[in-house]
Length: 397
Ligand code: ADP
Image 1 (cartoon, helix red, strand yellow):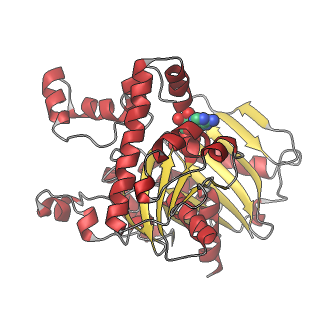
Image 2: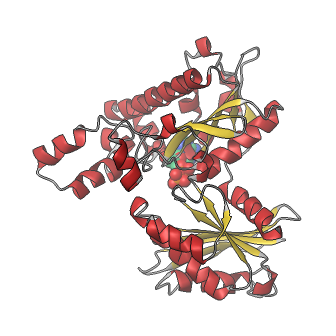
């Protein structure tokens, strides 16, 4: 079965074509700068990479280009579009109704349109990406895989905010959680490695956007992101959790609008805001190593907050069997992993520092110190594969 996975952003459309029978990626790429000046990159193992400027006025043009590249005699891997059996769409927000990966039909799209307000950045491109794909591939199954659905089973006391309850009823203001597909994938792998599907697992997805999730019995019980991806640990440019009154204070003090304040905590904060250097952890790490105080501080704040959330989830679950690091920073930044795990022996978390420094990147690594009570793993995430497998299951039904 061949499955195309599509991840449509506001000005990009990333894709991967999977051969599920062979368990491999046949091609992948990205259409960028959609609606601006258009750029496409396309890679197939064993073939030369392709990168070119392209006319990409909208997502429809992008998906047409992707299909023409996939079926191109020289660059492609398919004889025809009909070889694609199903399409899996990454959708950031499934609201309260789309609680699991679902075949996308008219009813589902109508519902997604009603919740665009909850997801103004990613909702519209996901819907237009789907519509474009459906138009050019009308006769196959299209599946939506939602970042929020992993959190569908968390308890009301973990998702209801302590504000007037009517605001939840009326406006659906609550914790939703994001990055669920990544947490589900790595928590599943960790449970496999432990040989225990009932395990208590804390997964740290630390990238440009970061979140931490607690999983018990294969189900998420809590997560650090909330109503939006703004909550939780500090990120590349997002502040993470803040005393909420900081925002109205700044609105008054700086004479800015609510939108400008949102931009301040969303795009100018986090590693970038504290360091004043960059949102990229590598740049901040380099400056910190060269003695830059604010870069050092930015990283200390990140580590401090990651530790705090790990500790709170251990308390919430009454224990932990495994701690997992994933995504750009979690998979690659050895120093950060060491700093997070330092002085957590009380909780049973201890890592083999030498192996943590030397383990291969891009592979699963067990960095647990011999004899430690809790396993610590590095597990490369693979959201696209998770989307493809959900799509395969639903397309077969
Ligand atoms: P996104 O949330 O955009 O998917 P990624 O998961 O790709 O982000 O993570 C991006 C982050 O990972 C950046 O802060 C980057 O600096 C960091 N990163 C990537 N490679 C390394 C590395 N070798 N060492 C430290 N940090 C890294």
